[in-house]
Length: 206
Image (cartoon, rainbow, N blue to C red; front, side, top):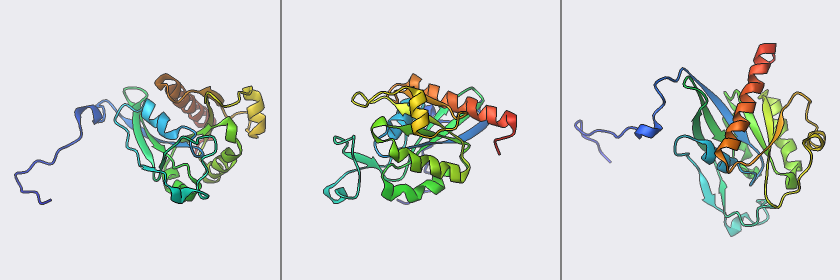
């Protein structure tokens, strides 16, 4: 489409504009395996309409994509999810959700670039997927917290047992959450921010 000099290019919606009081913005990554709730978390907590890159799953993905635990899931993120939430009048978090299918994991390095911290979402039905996720974050030096998403049909375990099963260091926070609820997702992000602050105070955050 050709624009004339007199044409006005539409800007962002009023509700999507960055608050004028914002003084700092932080990039946060929401990571995890397929179907753990990354898109749902970004969507539930974002104060703007989230950007999603979901595509319909087709027969071509059979044998390639693993949808164990999510047999009814019909779409998958192929690039990223994006949202924004204001923690205070001055601090804004930009949220980047990673694609879950392993064939799209090559995109993760770009999403991790510049991230101050991350949330690793976990499904107790597929704990083994979490090791690769946490390993990639550790390789990039991105601090993270672990949030166990509560699925109705997923087995429940004490957090102490999950910490042991995931071989989590004692200082890394782990909590339960329901990413469908805005308050629960926000609590996870606040836990991450407190963790990052504690690392900064001890000089462990570079």
